[in-house]
Amino acid sequence: MKKILLTGAGFQNKGSAAMVISVQKAIRELLPCAEFVLASNSPQFDAKRAKDYNLKVINYAFTYKRNLKPVMTLLSELRNTDVVIDLSGFGFSDKIKNTGILLRALTILLCKISRKPIILYSQSLGPFNRRFARIACEICLQRAKFICVRGEISKKYLNNLGIKNNIRIYADSAFLLEPAPQKRLDEILHLEKIPKTQRKRIGVAVNARIYERTPGVGTDNQYVKLIAKLSDFLIEHMNVEIVFIPYEITTKGYDDRSIAKMIHKKIKAKTRVHLITNEYNPHELKALAQTLDLFIGSRFHSIIASTSMAVPTIAIGWGPKYFEIMQTLGQEEYVVDHNNISLSRL
Image (cartoon, rainbow, N blue to C red; front, side, top):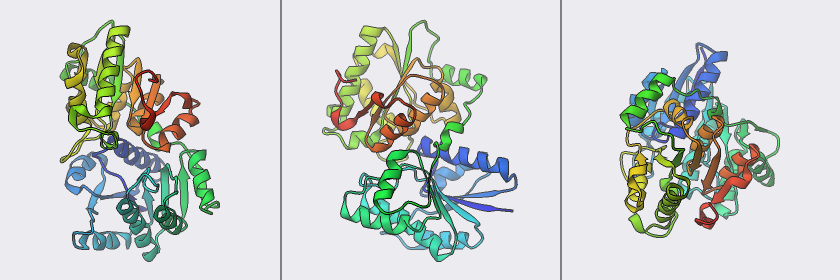
């Protein structure tokens, strides 16, 4: 029996969960008896959801302020592991804090110490302009057995680091994810009180990370005010319904539901707006995408869900991965960077 350790992913972010589920399913089609273990930064949260996928969860919630127990747990798990697959997606870049890069580099180092191959899969990597990011990423990425990137942009960044021989371009595994069945979709629409209507329906996935990178606090945040104005414009001029779909659920701090509530407070035509408040798995979110006539996504994997269901999509991004995925689909003209966003441009 092959034992595969998954790192860099979890179930709070539903895009991350989509990668875990789709990678696991694809490998099990080739290796039906494969055993999967998830090294989790939120072990209690993930364990409740991972049981639906026959996935063991271990505690890898390591920070510099805590003891080394999670590291020892990972080393112990590595003893009987055949291969490690990192699904961090966007973990090596100038856009990531130094602590985040170090934690991912630590995982690669522990794999090397344990003499276990590590594959970086479904990755958007770079840029590497900051000196620390460039040096740290060059050192650790050279030690990966294989790197699967999402597009030419990531490959170019790696080539500029001197990494050329172990790179392949593959589509994100979440494209393979199947939507929930129609019966379950109908249940969700009923539960969320989203009525059947003759009006067009536009979906919006906001991103708490963009909120954090944008000036202003609460309803005075520029990102919040812009999405509210855009919603009112679409309702007034296109006679549509707006549905806010959360792709990240957290137990502390801001998540996508928090940002959607702020936006809702600023929207004038509140009766045309629906806030999804419950947590749904990636299959269910993909099923919701197929009910839309247009999608405006600030979450990377929300864009994958909508485009894979053939829904016209506009991406609002905070890193090169958004342009990269839309370029792969021939839709790069429909990407807006959050630093250059405006109502007229949207």
